[in-house]
Image 1 (cartoon, helix red, strand yellow):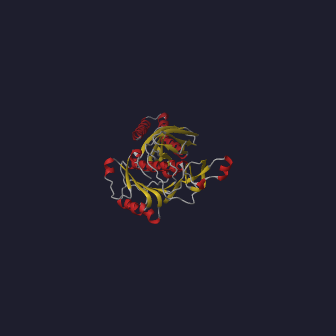
Image 2 (tube, one colour):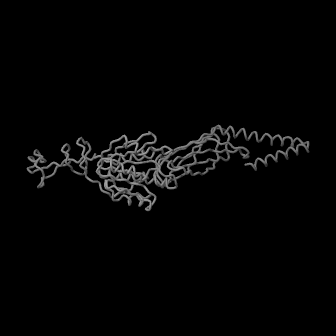
Image 3 (cartoon, rainbow, N blue to C red):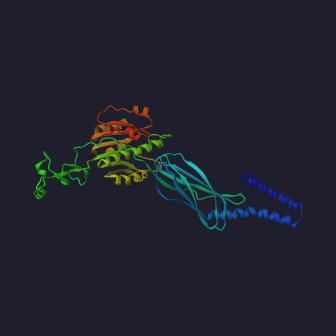
Length: 396
């Protein structure tokens, strides 16, 4: 562009010399045209810059990992002047990471028209992807002037984490809620407030479970099977504090979120109602989210991923533990840091039948260094990208 300006200035000087050396009217007209032309270019391009607006259009606000998703850049020009070349600078990044990717889109902008340019991006990791239009640069036809417009327009796309199958063990617990209103649809229990099913008498059945009215009608003993409460308290505590700032931050956060959701899905599949405690950056407080089944877990996924602020601030778990009394059949702590103080507190002061600590680590070597001499808590390192294999023997 600088070269174009120098060349045009040289042409004006040549025209001026031509006018001085020759008295023809053509020399004067040529000089006037060359002097007015930059003014016209500046004026029309400036007017056009004031009449252009841009925005993003998304087909879906939520997408899956490793899948290309389309984004449209919508540009509207209400002026009567066209732009032969415009350059749009697009930036996008995951809020879990400071690494910004950039690319440019080159396009003409038609007068009195609205047009859409579609591009595709994808994400290897879950999280919130911020897509930002850093600016649009427009040039006049002679490329003497440029204007930067439509700065810092952005949109967000939620990339959902994946679920991983876990082959652990969900144990029976003596902690039963006598006021339970949620019962298993697949397993009988001992709660007489709800009848699970009716069947024929089998030797050894208790006499107080015989349904006498049906027995008299069918002339054979019919026994009532009682229901099994499934709202036995289980708690998952998700520590979202960022303990490392490196190239591994994004994959560690990705594994962290997929670990908590995989454990939650495992509990939901086994009809164990549970709660997930995490810090919601948008609400600026810890949230205790109750998960009763798979549909509630599906709703929670988007809620969790979109709860972060760009600064990823999260108080330490001690802030929550200090103000909350926890009593659960199982307590599962998930973090990227094996803080011995927190682990010791969980082992000694959390009232739970089973206590697990799932610590996300970069590799096996780092996982082998995590040790705490306390039989009241089981520590399980979760290797990045190897969730199923890392916690296949969890007892919860």
